[in-house]
Length: 253
Ligand SMILES: C[S@@+](CC[C@H](N)C(=O)[O-])C[C@H]1O[C@@H](n2cnc3c(N)ncnc32)[C@H](O)[C@@H]1O
Image (cartoon, rainbow, N blue to C red; front, side):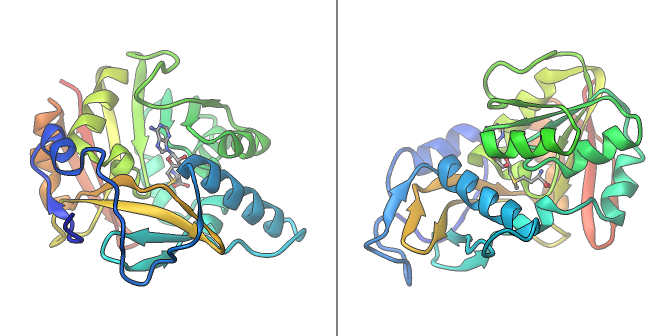
């Protein structure tokens, strides 16, 4: 399998390219680590990071490995922290009720709730859902691709901070998000800056002595969103840059 990300065309194409093949040798990656399901390792790292933020344990040592061997720290402390100015700018522009797809530990739904906006977080990770609820926000456990409460009634669906990557097939993810919206509803999506191409890759989580299984992830740049949105029958309503982050609102006709 190629270590290079591939240019995205369609969700089917992504599936054909990656299928269920398993990446074996990746430059620099540990070879004798225990393998865990991604959501379990993520939950474990998130719990460690949350404990640490309360002054009760060591920092997490979670990393994100890409198929080309490159490695980055997992930004769990950012996800556990409060929203920043850029988040507030975009959240100010949206209508409720709001579904936060892949809410993680819930900073966006917590901010919406504090602002009096009706919102619900949705996440695969029990630890993420529990932390979100602990922040006073509503959240449910589940996948965006399965049953979602009040499907077809949401005014806004959020895909923030990399969540357009969920499932590694942005066209399929946006189509699913569109089904969850009320007529004239909006998907608010965070994107890579101009000049970055749409790409699919395999990634995994790593921590000392343990790695997750590989899973598909995607990146979409602001230049490429119109084409991906069109495949999902969504129309760009506006794009904005706030604090060097890029966002687009995609409207369901
Ligand atoms: C990038 S992190 C969350 C970041 C969070 N939105 C924030 O900005 O703080 C991605 C989240 O998506 C969740 N996730 C991944 N696949 C999912 C799926 N199919 N349905 C719902 N949540 C999913 C993960 O458990 C994880 O919490």
